[in-house]
Image 1 (cartoon, rainbow, N blue to C red):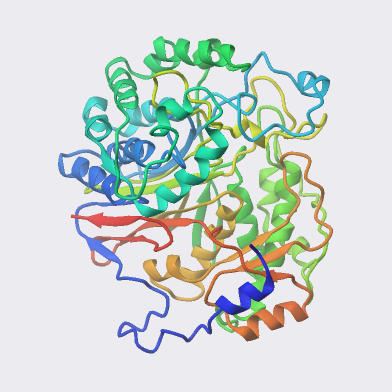
Image 2 (image 1 turned 60 degrees about the vertical axis):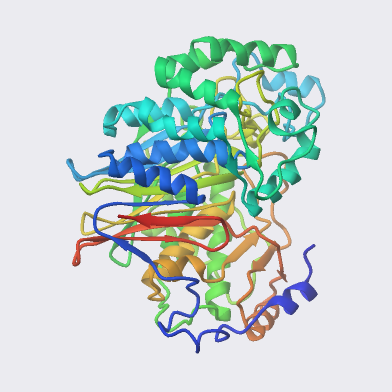
Length: 564
């Protein structure tokens, strides 16, 4: 439930709890993790330990990332799995360069916009067979491993195979999300059989096994990517979808290929912040930073009315362009250079006034030619991986192919069923994507690998982490634990959502003062409380002076940063 009364009951002054912290860090729930050889930060402690074990065996940061990601697919099926997509940014110490991989899948080639129109759909449903697109994760694993991996895939997947057969104990948070999904998804064939026990979700502390997933991972480890996209697994998926009114086929899987992409960046006060280009939404974070760079936050305190107001208004402007321009570049090319231009930001910044904007139109930049997991790893040679992976909404579409132990994503829900929109549905097209990994360099050297999972919160979270570190002088742990802002209600590049006309609403996490709430309301903002949409953060930084890794994992999830 969202209401102002609930917000005011839970909001506390920023100073609360700060005076009794011997470190003087008002928000940090614990110390940063510091280690000399390697670091892994994920949203699940068992997955973190698997990644750390891979590093100790001589694996690279990429090896550790794949091993941890596989474990999360088993241990957090509420957010990710091999039925979903994957994006990654890799810092390669050998070439001293960043590499990007877009591992998002495409829509079925046999399904058309005309079919949706003829059958009376205004939006693509969030569950069932229609939002299912090709899962890109396994392809991304092998593409990234071929370039940056060292240990064999069998070694990387073996820990998850063992946990899948022997069982792992469920945490309280994942048990909660699992319980929310079961009533919605049990009607779909294969879900109840593979993701419940007699129709019920597993409980906190209960050991959960998934022998079907163990078999699938063993097949992939032995047969490579083609075992998933061209072998028995692909045929099983195709047959299952055909039998259940779906369109995704074995041929769609066989045709899939992810894409190496060049990360894009903007400079924020001497730091280069990197994101991946569309069909993801990372450019929105860079656009927000361009807008905010002109303000002197050394004179604007964290949590003040001006801080939250400027952040929110910048978000509205960046998200208006996000709704207008972000889509699969093979179908609609976004004017990236224009969107990231400092001159364009200066022009758009003129629209930020002293009161809340109720509506914001997309700009005209100069033209040029869903629930998620985030993890990051670093190894002894200086390689770093920023990786994000998702089923989109919770446990995805609910479509669980017979005997395979995973659920297909519902990412196709993100398309627009309107002719002429850049993100309109088309066969063989990648939908607009919310999941975005991030990276920061300083003077051409790696400084930070980080991410904040959580739908439209992600670019907002990225900007807040960068500002917390650079503008407000927080350490890596405090930057993630500090109370967050989420603005909701912007025009979206998905579905039939109408344009923002009421200014949306600001959700303020516990920790903002009464004075800030009152001041924002006086500026015309609607301020509310929302339970839990503030994302989940992991980060690894490189301390060049001391030659050590620094890791952080926030308290909102089950995460753990660990090094050796």
